Length: 348
Image 1 (cartoon, one colour):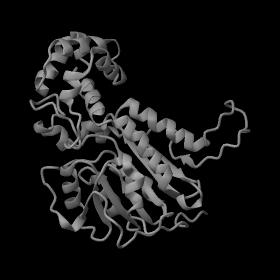
Image 2: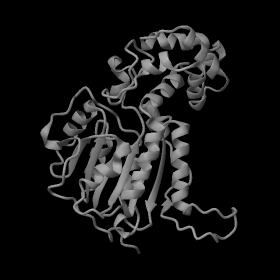
Image 3: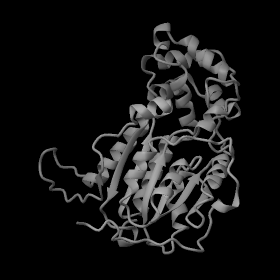
Image 4: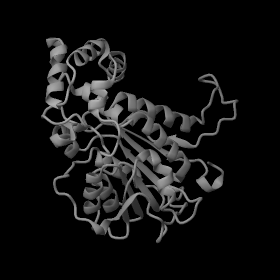
């Protein structure tokens, strides 16, 4: 039987702290940032066999997944990354009881490799795992002043990092009909995308989330409204554009490839088909080494796999979890285990 702990990695005790780093014992948790992590039991299970060392929660949010991992797996330490200062404060408080095993950093997850390398005790060390949860935390959705929700009145903001230059107001009031149509098509609006885009442009300027939601609803036929709130996918598309979420995901997966150690695992929770396609494609490339040979024939191109798929299809939340937490319904969980060389063995 393989020894799942054959590769051992060590955390630096005095590493540099990039960005706004907070040792977890330094802040109190923002009690208003309570969030129920999606598919936490499945995530905990997937990280059980990884080697002792550092697991990176690249979108730590309120720290729910991170706390569950540290509680279940004493052989792991954790680095949490988030660009939202409210999330950093909340996760820092939530992880305070794991003194010496957790650090929270304010940074973007597309800078994953650079941030992690600052915390490892040697330049070529690898990590034992990476978790990326692409969902929006409940407190972000539920706070009207953040502008994420179509159910309440608030400013058109939607920035995860409120120091960001682009806001939802810039997208809604500045993009052309063609650009808005492209966004809404990518988010699944199909034939209604252009119709919604024209209504938004005709009603400019927009400053309020509830008003924008009403404009979208008025542009959607009554039959389409029975499938749920007509503004849901539109708001999702705008949020993803404001935060450059798909390009950031691709960059984050580049970072995973640069820092993962043998036996480590990468798990990604996505909530949108576009994000899931990016994850599925990248995991597939890692699993077949980028093989270009015809399907069904032995590989003759010399491709070398660096990971193995832990589930052929995306795992979904159980009916019981969806009933308790409806936001889990859209979640798709994919995972791989690294079988390639570590960063100190020739990978970039």
